[in-house]
Image 1 (cartoon, rainbow, N blue to C red):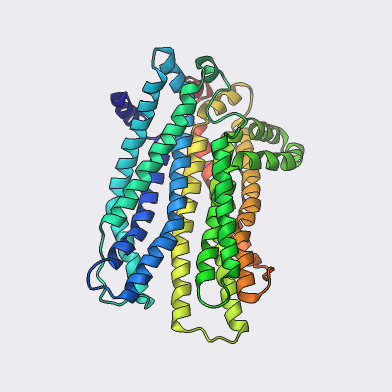
Image 2: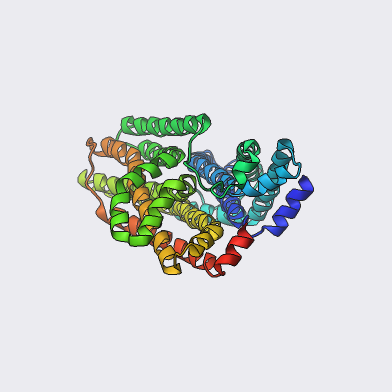
Length: 456
């Protein structure tokens, strides 16, 4: 089965691209922040510089670690679940559930190792950039030498490999249990279905939500002095966003129930097909909405938090000093790295989800749907998912914004920042629609009969 896993990777490189990019980018982000701990632990580094470097590595790198682990796990899970028919064929010719699990685990392990090892030089380059930023903002001394050692490599390799292995094991268990007839059915694509959630997923979602709320409480009671409230609040929206992402199938059903009537009424044939897919392919579309929630929650929460900090300083008559400006610059750059990762994962997931629908598009065209109607269907699906992602992402930002506002201004309701929200919404809409339309056009290039035959 390991040999079969190697052959599967070789023959399905395009199908594994999304998973490889998730592993690679996640490892780069984790290794970059992990290198700060290596740098702080080197000989000759002062206690002050060491505290700054290790704190940034553990606090910022810690919630970045959770985001990366979730992204790697969700992407690999989607990749494996989309191959339920292939797994059923293997079972029909005699493969046992244990053999399928070993094959999937072998694929995930090889993919994770390839992505993580490829990320080593890029992680070192990103780590050097972070250290240079800290020096330019006077957070650490100019004579601190960059170190790239066991913490960076251990966390980068460990998170990606363990995350990939965990995702493979959980998904392989579900696929191995699936009946052959069920998986070979016309609607048994792994991306279809009602998106029912197991107890493990519900438990994980609740734990992340509670973790986000706990950090929110700590941010609210931290007080206006210092930057403790910012550290706690900055992590809250990530944990809360991940927690909401675990419940994405339920959120998709809620959004569909609210938006289905106007989409069907004004969308014509495309609207009817879009609503039909939203109701029948909940699991796949939930995977597409997840990165929208994370992108919006992190962007709106962090940028709004920085505006609250600046307004609080201005209201108190505090003259912004070099340290405040340095921390603001650092927050924006670090947040930009995490938001960029979330944005890339948004494109990555949307392309992976849409590219897998080649057979579905072919069947709909054979049934009489035109290319224009199918593109309209994809646009309307994207519009529903984006609208829902914006709404739930904004909710995910509240555990950051509200307690931080209370800590700094003694008011739970900060002034609205429509510019931040509209800017984030514009980026989410453009990225989502461009990714969906681009991948859909490629999926529609082949003749309908050929697409059905090849995908089958």
